[in-house]
Length: 280
Length: 161
Length: 83
Image 1 (cartoon, each protein chain N blue to C red):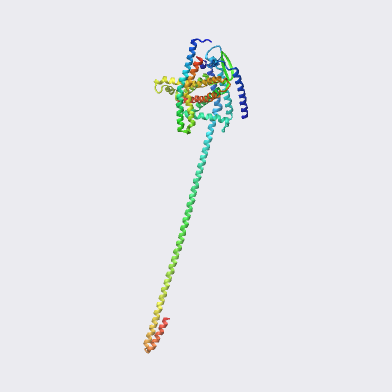
Image 2 (image 1 turned 120 degrees about the vertical axis):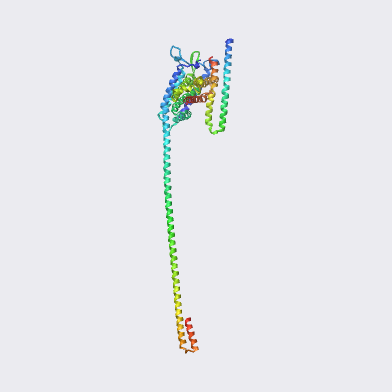
């Protein structure tokens, strides 16, 4: 297994350097404005003639997130099939992540009824976002650029596209957490108690409470989006500055591993904190 | 503003997240909870077992201690009893010896008294005899001085013997 | 390539705006993260056995304090690239 991994690594590095040299010769744009032009645009396709929000799709986001989800499902089925009392390596990795999250959730959530659902939601969010951030920040891969209306693919000029660098993903998850926290609040306090919680400490504060609650999902999603999206743009620019040849490994590692993992943890911790603030 | 566009992708993302949540719950979380519960139960059972064993050992120790105390008490009693008996025996022996000694002393004294009394009575008798003989001699009146002396000397010598 | 005065002014405005947004927006998070780091160091010096927990919490607090800086980064990109 170890020898196999070594051989795979060597093959990957050989391909990587070859493609890097080809990129450095053929694909480096002559003008810097050519690089920054397509940075803020996304590859969006329209699935029908009608131009509305429900007919437009980001294929890159969906493809990357499905790749991650399929990988996770395969891992889960493989590990879950022989879950034993005495764990092997993969199981102990899973269990150490779960233990870490479960301890935090258990210490934050007071009501024992909501510990397990909160744990499931926050852990799933953590695993998914962490993997997508790491894949999107630290693994060199396919870059999709939009140059003048046509889609151009280049290999190894950038890291993979992270699903969390798309605001669709982040805002959806943040709104989902918002809805879940209020559902839990209604379950925990009853409908009357939930309505009453909007008028606390006194009815004058009602608008402030509404604004505060609505600001939660926005800041929740924009924090992750800004970190991952900004990191992706910076990584792309740094890759251009070194002409795709030398690897800005430090920056990839920083934006991918460090910031990515911390932001994933922050996202799931804030999920737990919002739910706990609603049900207490 | 393509960077901030919200479109159908969000719905797809929500669906895929719910699917991921379901699969992870079915394959990982449920089993994780089961395993942790089983582990907790096992550890608790083992702790309980150990506690039971400890309690049993303590009880056994207590019993042993009690028995030991009993045995010790009994031994002490036996020793005390034997000591008492020995003292009794010694006391008895002493008393008996004393009594016997007293008896012996008394009997010896009595014998001495008796012998003395006998001797006194003999002396009295002999003195009486001498007096009688003397009186008879005086009564005869025919005796000379010389004969008197000789006779007296003879008697005296005889009484000396 | 001929550029008119209006185009040049637009580019200048974009550059100044993005620079101001990023520069001013970085002051707050910088001070906040400095405070967090200083107090985390204090706490670590007081309780060296808690270093692991404090480091984790410090990174979390850093990430939260950083978010305003990240917003300004987003705004700067928005001004430069899409406006």
